[in-house]
Length: 185
Image (cartoon, rainbow, N blue to C red; front, side, top):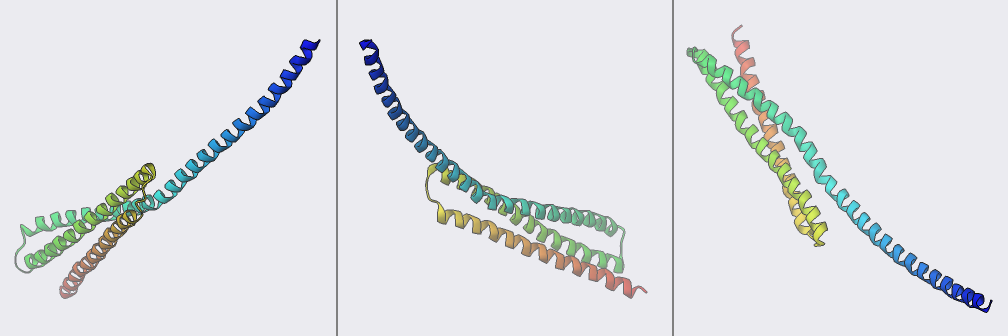
C-alpha cells in the first residue's frame, strides 16, 4: 500500500501541477482573449470610421441620380429644339436659338456637377481604402485622411454649386418661355 500512498502523493503533486498549469493556461487564454478583444475593438473602430465616407458615397449617389436625370432631360429637350430649328425661321428661329443656348449652358453646368459629384464619390472610396490600409499597416495617416475627406466634401460643395447654377439657368429658360407666351396673346 505504500506504493498507493506514493501514487497518491504523486497524484497530489500532479493535481497541484495541473492546477498551476491550468492557471497558466487561463492567464494565457485571458491574455489572448484580451488581444482578440483589442483587435476586435480596433476593427470595429475602423468600421465605424469608414462608415462616414460610405454614407457620403450613398448621399452623393442619390444626388448623381438627380443630376443624370436632369442631364437626360436637357439632352432630350435639346434634340427636340434642334429638330424644330431645322424648319424654323424669323422670330421662331431666334427664340429656338436662345433656348438652345440655354440648354447648352445647362448641359455644361450639369456636366461639371456630375464630374464633381463623381469625383467626390471616387475620393470617398479612396478614403475608405486609406482607412483600412492605415489600420492594416498600423500607420497613423491622420492628417492625410482629413485632407482626403475635406477634398471629397469640397468636390461635393462645388457639385452642389453647379447644380444650383443649373437650376437658375433652367428658370431663366422658363422665363423666356413665359415672356414669349405673354407677348403672343
